[in-house]
Length: 140
Image (cartoon, rainbow, N blue to C red):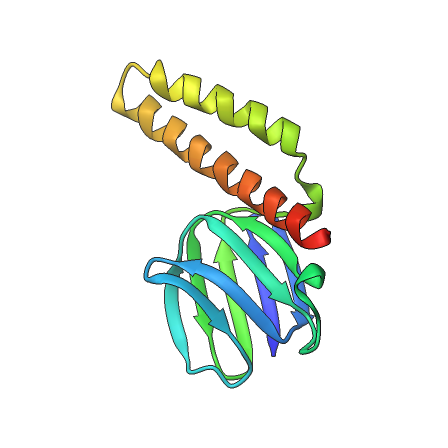
């Protein structure tokens, strides 16, 4: 099946795949060829892509995504999100430092707008750290 992962910055993935696992508002879903048509909300989390049917877990490709929309047909998947960071591009130490700054910003917020922005940053960096950890664990 064909996967397109599209962000505000452009297309991150435009390729044939076998399986995609994605976080949705209703829980994590796995999508395989001939999946029933579906449109659902994506929530911040990790997308895992298995390119070929026999690929082991250590060959999964990971992306940290922000929320968005997932459109599924029997032959294609289109994921539309604000951001998607490839697991190979995430530097754990930098994400950990950014998470700590975001938590401090959240704790020192003086109004709801600042708190909401800080919560978004906390969520983003927690997802990035989760993807980095998944990538590291599956590369062993």
